[in-house]
Image (cartoon, rainbow, N blue to C red; front, side, top):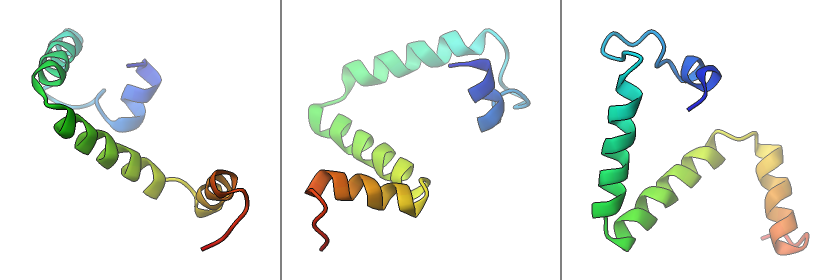
Length: 74
C-alpha cells in the first residue's frame, strides 16, 4: 500500500502499526484469501464494491449506471 494511502486511511499514526507490520498484514491477507471459498470471496468483494460506490459522489454513480444501461433509467 502506498505511503500516501496509508496516511489517508490512518495507518500512519496507529499505535500498533510499525513499519514491519505491513509484511505481517500481507501474509495474513494472502492466507485468508487462500483459505476462503469462492462464495466467501465474492461476498467480501461485493461488500467492498458497495462500500466504494456508497463513498462515491452520486453524480459519478449515476453516470456509471447510465453507461452500464446505455442511458436507460429505472
